[in-house]
Length: 245
Length: 78
Image (tube, rainbow over all chains, first blue to last red; front, side, top):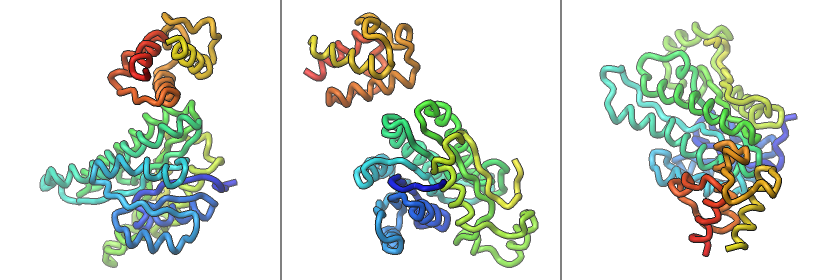
């Protein structure tokens, strides 16, 4: 039902917890995956772990020229690109009144503008083939807001709106565009929390636990597979009930 | 010239699924041949592929009719 044999995927931010889990899950379903990220060595290790059907494409999404080159590089490596997962993201948290222009600009550039450029490049081949899947990893805070994350929340909300607009444009060509909005997930980012912070976080999650990267990857497999072909312009909230929208 | 015209018309017929006799040089993709804006982008992509040329966005915006396409491609693909 969720078989991806013969499909190809590009996952950005594949060195992170969620990105790696998504790449691993797509790969497990049979897809050939191109993994991208800034840390080439970590990518190589990850690729070695996955074995066959993997390509390593290091890319700094803050570099416009590198972003423009990424989809063509993926298409060259994979033959064609069926599934694009815009997962890479950075945080530059600060109170709104203290937030520097650079902190705002960096987060918008990597989390939103790079995603726009990758979608624009990927959709061309997908339109020709009348099929494709684009998945943006946004965040619960793009919908609920979060103190200290004005830039991050704006970029993540922007990704949701952008995906809806693109979804409406290309739905008739067999391409779906969706977002996944993770809540609190066990990653390096949440490992940094102390016990007290962790407790406060859990108090807001009805499921009573943090999510795992695999919880997010399962959603990505669903949206990427044939089973998800009638779902487009949507945001799948995977958050243990912390926000019900 | 006539060869280019034939190839352009063939692409338009195939892509838009219209009767060949409707694809005259004066026919507008959107007004006469039922294309939507996304179809016009796809037509430009198909022309680029068929003729091995790159059609910049500002030029693409001026290609509104079958004749416009033939004229543009006669110049660039020659």
